[in-house]
Length: 142
Ligand SMILES: [Zn+2]
Image 1 (cartoon, rainbow, N blue to C red):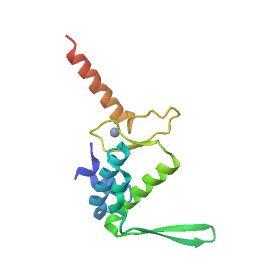
Image 2 (cartoon, protein in one colour):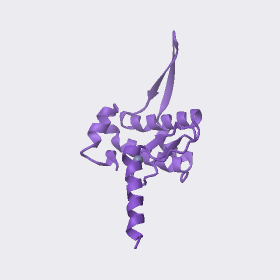
Image 3 (cartoon, protein in one colour):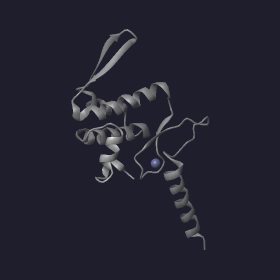
Image 4 (spheres, helix red, strand yellow):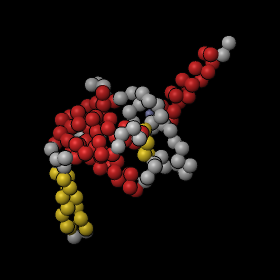
């Protein structure tokens, strides 16, 4: 289940999330790197190349600071997801993880008290994985 890899579904997802189609390739690359970083199979410095042309510029306003992302249009979505990951890493350590369904490319933010959530969605991945485990258990029973 990879909505961004499906040419029939990707345009709808991009539109719903305010991302232009020129951002898709870099966004998918950033997501895949972040999956490895969040799983612990890659170090965070592997994200460096995504940020090499990006800069945040602060402007003082009457209410505080306003931050503008200065980056090429095609890389805007990729940089935004890396910034979002970093904010979660700082503000909610240990709460961002990848979905336990290895066919799924989504992340989840665990807001539960025991911090044991495994699925991006119980309605999709959770029930699908439970049904698969049930099938595998009953299939091997004589
Ligand atoms: Zn999932």
